[in-house]
Image (cartoon, rainbow, N blue to C red):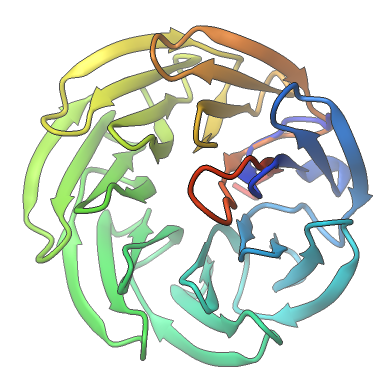
Length: 309
């Protein structure tokens, strides 16, 4: 893989890994980590998302996103967004949402053709995005808040406090979970109204966060491990070693994948016991991971993403 991989996304059968410093992205078979494809990207490939057929990549220095056909990596287009799009890309079923870290906005693009459907203000330093089926949640690193935006028209529905410097955000079907880089905690917010349901201590500098259907997995960047929390009450179920400087985390339907930025690798963990099922070399600085599963139960791929931070 590339140097310092940060991010990963799953497309239903494969993992895609963004290699920031080397301006490339790789496609790995999720069943065994075999490399299927390596492509040159326009920029550092900091953020990744899957829309059911295509991979979207954030280009932080070009202030744009690129759309690639997941089947073969063919470039379908590049589209301008705000300043320094990065870690935050999310698909709402019809549109791609992009966090613009340097102008405190998010951009909504129509997935079919990349048309700009709106730019909406959020908190300072938006990083990660999550879609809950109706609304988009945005973690803003500098303002230590999470903004809820109605996906249909971008109307802000609420701004809610999180821990210090929220980084990652995910939805568990009912609630929103936020990893707080600066306070070493994870915050659980009620999806309907943003009420805080709990704050749970994890490792130092928690970054990527993912839901496996029952539990929450959080990468602790400074501790080189991943914490598994019970989704119902936040009880810690285990802490598992991975590579150096883990950032992105994604669930592929059977395993958890972690992008290890400082050791240029991706680790695959079993969800039942956190056992390491494989460690795969990256070509860059992997930062995040995402899942692109088309239908429940379908096998898929992972894509790794590199972040600009």
